[in-house]
Image (tube, rainbow, N blue to C red):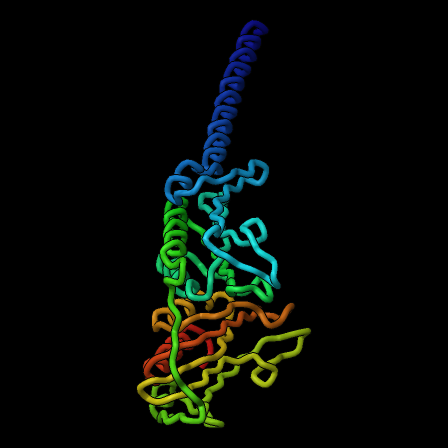
Length: 310
């Protein structure tokens, strides 16, 4: 009896050991799989972007940088170089099974919208557009980009953004121009109203439509009268007009609004916030477009339809 018990004990120990080994092997395989999953293919990113990058091993971030050595910028009389903030970059980081991208592009005014269109058309998000300096000549704008998804697609999109920056360098971007004076405005507001589905007001040669939204600050609702509104101001004639204005939108609506405006050939000139701590968070976008009054109204209406506003 004792002999049989010892055999059973040995058998149990052997089986337990085998199971333990198999479990450890499985964990090891899973760990190896996770480790492989969490590693960027830096060689592929370098190949696709055409830029040699730098790996921050501690944070697992691979960054490619393109200094704007082609720019001759002075700020308040100071001669600027790329190390002083005139460098475009894109940073890649693994986020689970996907890759996260964050970056910033250094652009002259005539480059902003051509580069923005390329970013949007290739699946990137545009998250901010603003200045970093005062008194800079020529004026430099900074467009921040982001994305989440397939590593190769993100890297390919960044490559196209960098290529567009190079292509439009040296004054080869887009500079809209129109000889218009509000004092000579002759456009028919009814044509704009028909497209927009709402009426505005004519004052000093400017036909303006305003659409309010609401958010909360400090637990209090704030709306149109406090500046939470989208507006469009039209000047000129039916055949040649300019529209400028401001879009107010939720964060989740921003990319759709950008695509609609750029699709209508309306330039985006700033993306930022006007407040802090509001709930829900509100983003503001300033725009400018030149063309036929009705076409401009259709562009604004399309962007408005991409939001939760009326």
